[in-house]
Length: 94
Image (cartoon, rainbow, N blue to C red; front, side, top):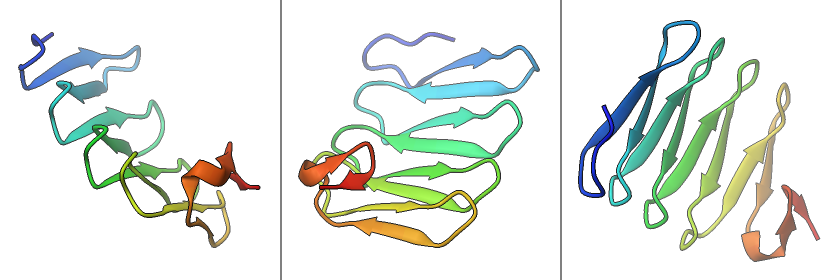
């Protein structure tokens, strides 16, 4: 299903039969199932947070454009907290 700009979601099965669910531009979250892993949830640009589950590790939580902080844990380790994304380059605080 492919919605118009104000539609609900588009669903497209991948090579292994799982689904990709991508809400419309004004929707709350984008949910994309990994081929081998759990779910990636990415809200729209005005949403509260981006939550991305690693295949082998815990969650990566990345605040949206207007959000307060970026939390990016290591794949197998604890979390790296990056408070100001405007000073981040590929998850590395500068």
